[in-house]
Image (tube, one colour):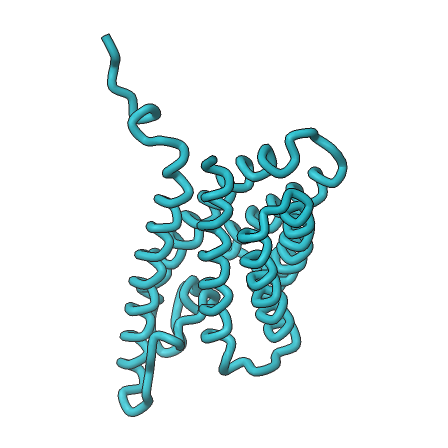
Length: 207
């Protein structure tokens, strides 16, 4: 007689997709709440969903308001995608590098370091966390793309290159304090390219 188990009822293959779904829903909710708060503060200015920047969404308060009501939703969104990425990263290493070696240690370790730092983003210094998480993430994605090329996973490779370009551009503009007004829009393009790559990596690891 089979006994019911949550562990058996939820396939491990669905965990990355579930984490991504939670991220998208809560991220959109946090943006809508944040935009609504900004509209209340500046009723004469045009506010759109492009104004929702992740670092602003997780701030404890908004200038002019007592607290940021979008923060809990943004934190849940951030942590859920980090959890899904951790799970996916663990599966990816067995697909691309079944034989443990130094090359595997580098990109896997850099990726884990970047993800763990992002988990601390709601509580730490944004500039420092973004810098170290961004730099380690960029090199990790670069090494993964090299591995994808070696394994002839071209679909995931081209999506990874697009995400790498977007991620590098986003971090450079943030660090150089250049085109700051466009950063929310650029970040959303970076997130979109990440979601595409994330889904393709999940497809690769689900085989």
